[in-house]
Image (cartoon, rainbow over all chains, first blue to last red; front, side, top):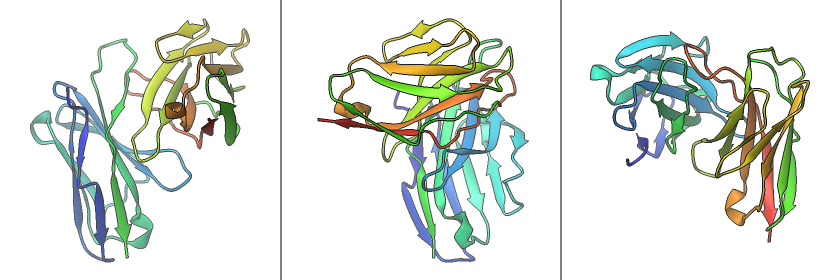
Length: 116
Length: 111
């Protein structure tokens, strides 16, 4: 078990550019989450997958954001036409959900995005 | 998720018990209390959860008041590695529910 891996750890981009982040969850975890965190705030839920199905997207997630989880393994989060307000830490978490059991989220160390 | 209120920051001497309070006066009858912590430059880490009974695991103890309107996370022998932001969350963490993180308590362990 190597934990949740996120790449890159840091990304600096210019406003208007597209960026893509990758998350590799703990193997066999069936759920994968994306959160966003700004300085001094707790993580905010963006979206989550159960296997390859994207089950929910937050209202925070504008049309410029898209996430995929092909084959229910790794996931990518793409931000198109980045804006300075997109600067944040993007966290990925995975979990193994059993019916009726409490989910424990395992988080990666995040990708820090800076939009100049 | 029910709203929680935590002090923004606390200090604790190394080796002492760290007691982190959380108010969740609007918690509903079947919502749980979860605690996560976030060490600098890392993602949050699950600590413990409970409904109404006190809970203990290898990391911490959770004391929930009888009326369930507040709880306390206890780190029995705090070490410098326990310096982190601690999040108290009232809600559900199974099925299709998602946890809502607040701003947490920044705990600093003093050598």
